[in-house]
Image (cartoon, rainbow, N blue to C red; front, side, top):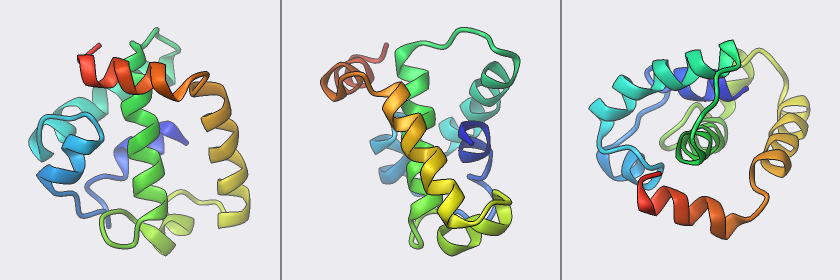
Length: 112
């Protein structure tokens, strides 16, 4: 799901520089430059920094849920799973990846 959440930016999703900066990327161009690298690292089981895990999670949360910036209701088609299944998966990822919200936010803000 995290891989999809990164790569779906560029499909029906409509990011702005402000929203991608909130996700921890420098710009829309930066998101498009970094998303493939992070997605490939997730797919191949390579270690990611806390910052990259956090950016992948935030990008997935927004692209899945937001009808303004993300895929919104189209995500059931682009992700290929109904919302009921996707939310269970997303909640599981959130539980696994956010041992401490403060740690994730601090790492993101510090650029780690």
